[in-house]
Length: 384
Image 1: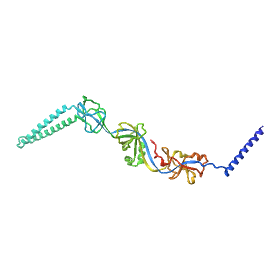
Image 2: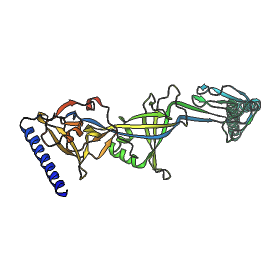
Image 3: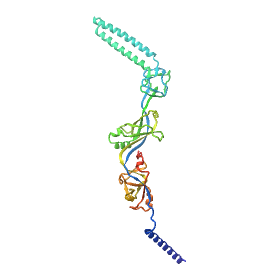
């Protein structure tokens, strides 16, 4: 029985061997050829390298004025509606002017009397009826009375509490009949100028150093070509107006390890309000001649080097080693190994390898939708 099984096994091995030999032998001569794999390629072209970073921040009013009275008394009237736009110089409140009117009238009367006396002294001095000292003293008294009258007139004007800036006025903390004073700590109300609007952004110090290195010297502070987009809350659609970099702080906050950037945005529709949480996206083209490939076009060799398949002359495929250290969005930025005009396989890489890839294998080529001419500018992810 064992001998019979041995003979059967040997016969089966022989049958398989001769069948395989016949198959491969005939395929070299007259058998059908395997079809060439079809792949999609991109043609390498220069693309701009863009620095992009997104940082949260808060909106701050362009100008803020806390309204406090400059004289004390009873609030007699309020002239504005809360939430209104007020113009610079308009009256907001009126403090009861009665005592200030009386003081003004008294100082005017005293001034008139001292001026009349001075006029008589000037006549009498010509005849030496009064001394020069008496005349000088009277002139000094007139000057003092004029100062008192001016101060009384100013205090009378201060009974009207006026808007120091134009802007949107908030809620009032005092109503008619309230007692106010010139030294009170609490503001009666606040005026905010909302157009334009500041956005203060605490940028991590490492990002600030990198950005300064990119822009070189003072170009960071000027940043005339820096594009700043704004996203309000969780909104994925950017705010309709672009911002500009107004200033950057000169020191790092030791508590947050951040440098405060102050940007400025137009706000004609008053969409931005003070204290609003926003996200600012900075983008700046730092190089015009970058080379990028989609991430799926890159493979890694066992030693960690990047490899791509390139279609050469006569649609023959070859393997290239490339240097790709940074992923930007859905692409790899290629530092070495590819040139403008190279055709890189993006779709069909697996087909080529399954077909027994070897240098010089012929393939069918079709353009890829990932061609740089049809893609957007690559963006660098936030590395903060």
